[in-house]
Image (cartoon, rainbow, N blue to C red; front, top):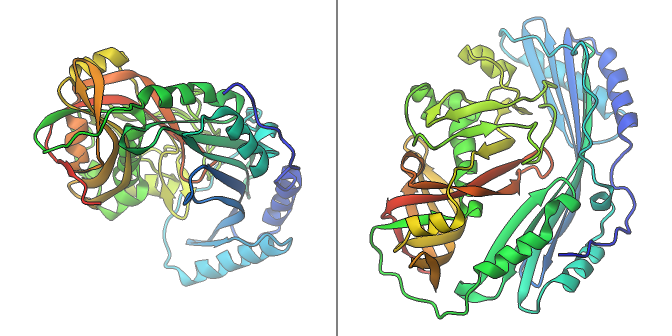
Length: 449
């Protein structure tokens, strides 16, 4: 897409410096031994262009998350209110909560850094002032009559203060574009995400969707054992499921994560490397977690070996691990800047490796129904046969039943190119993954829809 949308709306967020000042003053007045207050504000919009039943929205939300320590008791309180006096009320509520909790040990809250780095520039004014009307106008200029799109964009900000004098604040924007070229089983889909509209490379997304479409008539699929080539968009969904169901602090604490029994053991294929790196420009970087700890690269899986779950300071003390800088509030921690590292295979090499099998464009309605064994069920869409090293006839949607452990324990090839998807919260990060080839997949059957 060569034309950018016109930005006609005013700024969407509260003045961040003013919010930060209010947090600082109120935290200093707290009677608790330790106090931490985190303010998260976000505006998220979505336009469904030429998608009759597409969900569209314009949502503005606030979240205030307070933690306190009073002696050997911890308390917390979360609210979506944004009134001037709500910060003081939230701290009082957290102190009251601590009195009702059992005594427990807790690590000290984060200390200020000796020489804090200036916050990075992650905010795009063009996205922040974009209106749904302007976004639709932009899409109408760029898409063909038989093409449709979902375009989502968010503006957000985080301010954090604690009683040790730690102060953090950061503004960030993000956008996510999905394009469908054509209709029916032969339609081509492609997605991409970025911190700014200029970095989105929308033209490449459009060209990829058109390259993936076909006018051939759909073929039938009778099942069998076949190699499967997953597009990056499909791999991302599997990586995100693994992130939340196996590597999060909550999964580790509650005991259903296989990682707890297999740290340091060869579980996955040696070509499987999973890292969280909030400093990398390849994804959607963000400088700190919601405890104010500076983010850095963390190897979750190295050459197929799980190295650590993602933990905040409380979970790190509980499990006798080092904090990884992944606090997301609510007593949980998970990766928000996740990368499955690319491999060396070109697009043509991937097709040749999976010859005689299937190519899957994307996965929808994905679920993990046996957490211990990581069994998954999902719907494979945009399915094509691979014949002679080329994409061939389209197939109807297929239901796929498999195990995430099996999927990532046998990788026939890993692609060079990757795609990025915005994280669930819409602002704090994203997930990146390449195409992968899986040998001998058995669990694909035609959907009954």
